[in-house]
Image (cartoon, rainbow, N blue to C red):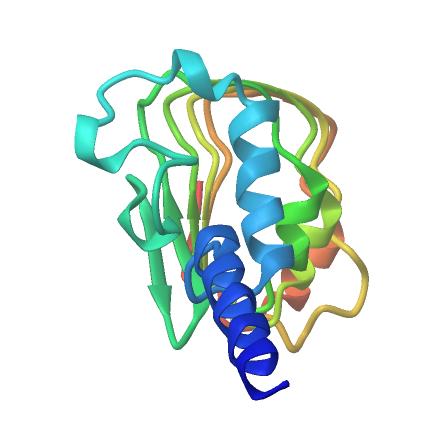
Length: 172
């Protein structure tokens, strides 16, 4: 019986080591994976061979920074991303910087990004984004310092909620 328990423990540990997605929670891994597929990850450009996405630990993926087992930065500037920004990025609780500028992203900017509690830089300029910039009402708790949305195909007026971004120092 003792040998069976040891064997079961060895099998469990071995299976966990092969299914591990690094130190981040599984839902964060899933969000990164969705970003990859939704923005045509196989066609991204200028990604070093040893920093390819979906290979190895996410902390080794190009443009991803993980601190305390959470994704805090995604920086994929001028990497050939095409498609839309996944709304699920707004579920990354510790995300501080999202920099997807100088790509070919289309669609709208997910409203939920403005509600991320730790986000201080949102850079989506120089894309093909369209629609209206939707900033939720009452986001005075936002830490957003930098909002770059220029050189897109956004329409409408700057929403009055922009004044609720008390810490905003750069708007372009």
